[in-house]
Image 1: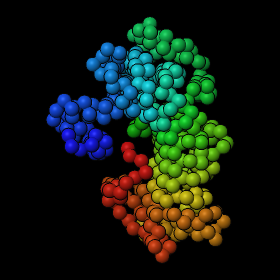
Image 2: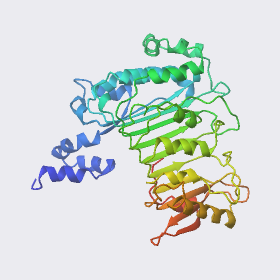
Image 3: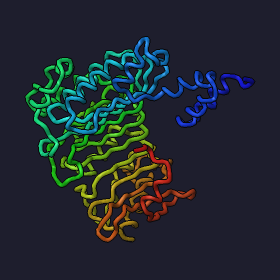
Length: 404
């Protein structure tokens, strides 16, 4: 080949997986060149773990793996299988010394929620890659007791293998929800994450029922000095943020908070106040919440005024204020509010938001308007604010701070 190998590798970095597979079919030389790139990302299972064992067909590619997804069964009725699969995959992860990104997705019942998370993280903390982990995502779907697919813990324990019972240890014996939540601080969370995502949903998330909020795990607790991107989806967002150490997370530039159904602890205002304290240098902020936020504003109020303290804010997606209709008067008030945030003469706007590009206010669907709508307030080159109403689909063509 006349083209230098380094040029080949540089070009291959930009190809999709399907293109890389097609490229590998050209010859054995092309296949050997592409294989390490094809296995940069891996969905770990019992079968794939065996393939990477010493002597396995892929054992020579262990050091090529950078991103791993550990995903259990999507059905909450398979809790015993999920626990055994988590144990097997955690043991298999020791084969990959250069992992930098890890995604863990599990389905559990409340009784096994904390024990399984604690067992997985404790096991991972002994792996050689753990201290160098940069991205960690923890997604938990919990089948609560009122769910038709819920099964009692005795039935699940009866299906566990001896190794599975040993894996979760005696953590199921903790006396209460609050005892388990307190125990979270003793879990060996990663030390230097740059990106973290923690999601806790219950199996009836989109119904009218409001069960006991499930704990959202502080996987980023020990990463205050390094964390750059953070996503939290849970009914206990506010409780999690208030339980964090008082010191801020100065490097977080992208923040996505999504309080889910069942979060009756607070409205938007106290959450935003905590955000300003903990994440003072946020550039991209996304806040997803149902329209009933418990925050009411009078026509003379400046909406979400505490956001004027985020001096580096560039883009934000915020919920429509609860007591405001979608009309020209409300849109005018929102545009006026953003102007006040960006005005350095206003006491609440410390830095004047000199880098502000736009703020999106998202209004949910109603009986007369079946789709979401966005009112976007944009800063023009002359410094003035300009608002425009658009459907959500139109706004989504632009790059969002996070991808779903």
